[in-house]
Image (tube, rainbow, N blue to C red; front, side, top):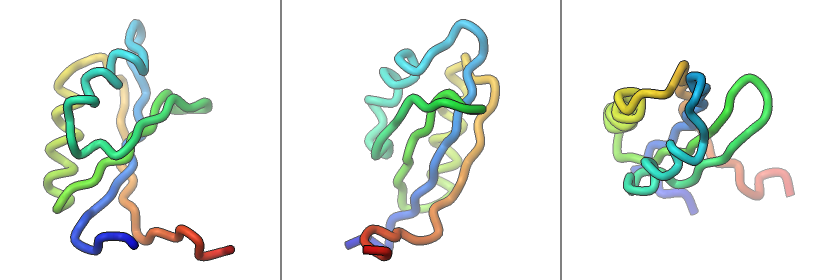
Length: 88
């Protein structure tokens, strides 16, 4: 069951030239708020699921990753509801 006190958001990341998923994934591995990360195809290069106590904390984590450099663009999509099993 989903913990109601946890806020979740997906960070969609587009890398600047010369950066890659593996560099950022190594940096993300030290952040306990990252629930998962994936290299993806399409307009974005990577997606990460962030879990925190508030949207403010998610914003801080987002800005921490941006400050590392190598990110051309980042978009944050908040999770509204967890639908696991809703359509089974």
